[in-house]
Length: 166
Image 1 (cartoon, rainbow, N blue to C red):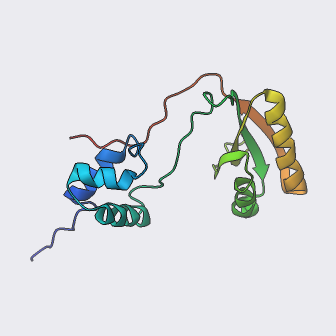
Image 2 (cartoon, rainbow, N blue to C red):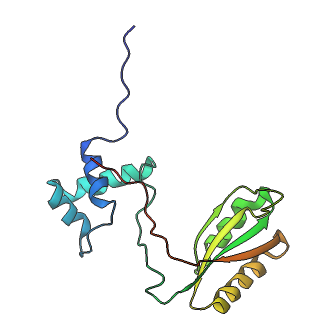
Image 3 (tube, rainbow, N blue to C red):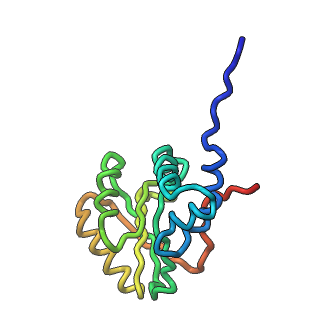
């Protein structure tokens, strides 16, 4: 029986694009053009490939990653919420639209120790500012939440995603 090997998820150019951008896009007015010049392809090829990699889920997003501490936001609190599992997607979408929530996601509860299933990161210049923002979330949710708490960052951890190596 003849078997056809599956095609790789990414080819050589995709791999070179991922490796060239995994630490960030060039900080220039036209980053895709600079990247294209470095890799010896056209900017259109770079943009088309990156769109395809996003659509396939090979890369999750392209976006700015600010250093909140350097911007003066030193009170960073992960607000954790106990919401009905049936409403977590709708509730999370509403929370994620708030301009002071940098990211919001669903995680399984770990009963009886951990009742929370929805997490929303809130940044502020003080704990009081974070607490005021969390109160706004609580007001938005109303009776859709059965409790919440805030977990404050105590140290900075370097955050990186998966890295391709040679």
